[in-house]
Length: 124
Image 1 (tube, rainbow, N blue to C red):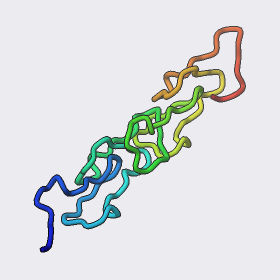
Image 2 (cartoon, rainbow, N blue to C red):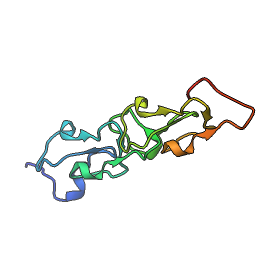
Image 3 (spheres, rainbow, N blue to C red):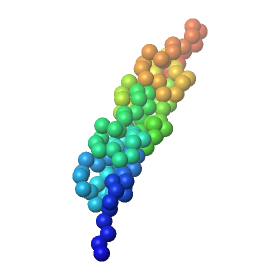
């Protein structure tokens, strides 16, 4: 006798960091990865709206990320106001005469001017 599934729990969910809107899928290759610059902890997601953009000041080149920790901070001396960045190239250097000692900064205003009696010819 043929044996079929009798319970929806026997259907396998697409893994966290992926999604599929296809009904009646028969293979895991229908599970699309969240794009680089996004992440999702949701398994069995039915659309890409579960993919959350990396916050400003962070970026991720990894598609299919399943945790916010995949979003890496912009380096010291840089900042980015972009959400969902897929490359570290969005991180802009602080201007000459300024510095920034912290990671993951989201706007230029965090760049600190060199104190009187000090200078910097280098950006970042």
